[in-house]
Amino acid sequence: MHEPAPVLSASNAEVVIDGAVLLPPTSIALDAGRSVAVRGPNGAGKTTLLRVIAGRLRPSGGTVSLFGGRLDDRDPAVRTHIAALIEPPVLYPDLTVHDHLALIEAAWEAAGAGAGPAPAWPGLGSTALDRFGLTGLAERFPNELSSGQRQLVSLAVTFARPATVLLLDEPEQRLDLDRRSLVADALLDARTHGAAIAFASHDAALVARVADAETVVGEPRARGGAEAA
Image 1: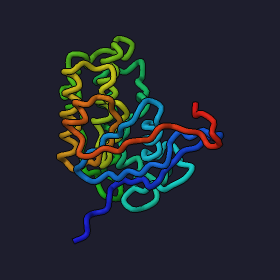
Image 2 (image 1 turned 120 degrees about the vertical axis):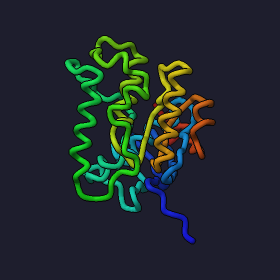
Image 3 (image 1 turned 180 degrees about the horizontal axis):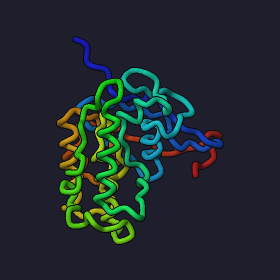
């Protein structure tokens, strides 16, 4: 029997800008119901790799595919199936935390009527408030939140929507150990429902609990012998 093809994959994807190698040639394969930790030192290109496989940055070389076809950032399937927390999402100053989750839930309920296969994981919807310990903060506005609370809201917004692929850049940042456990629980829940996951992390405990495999991104370098910025 043939093994199923990866949901999302990159083969020797690299990013070179003005001679600086922001991402050395890197390959990664994300399978349904499995989680890959993206590891490497600061500046190695972990965030750049996530941006490439999320369709937010086109690689200079190599290939990236979704469901076996070329990843096209203009394809509605990318928006339908890939949920990514790479840069913090925009939080509207005049909407409460609850309003943000209600907006996301309503938007994706409407999108669910579209053509094509449904995302593997239905998302948490408004229950993301409770899952990330935000129920007591539901009526607060973004300017009333600490940096750690804003990170939890960013996670809740990302996990609220349905997805087949989840991509997260250091989801544990600015969170204490108890809150990091909430992140691990949410990742495990999505993985159990068949989501394909990649996350960059410096938290060895989170990686040990959640990851099925690791992809290590090499040290940055520049062509021609110059140091990468």
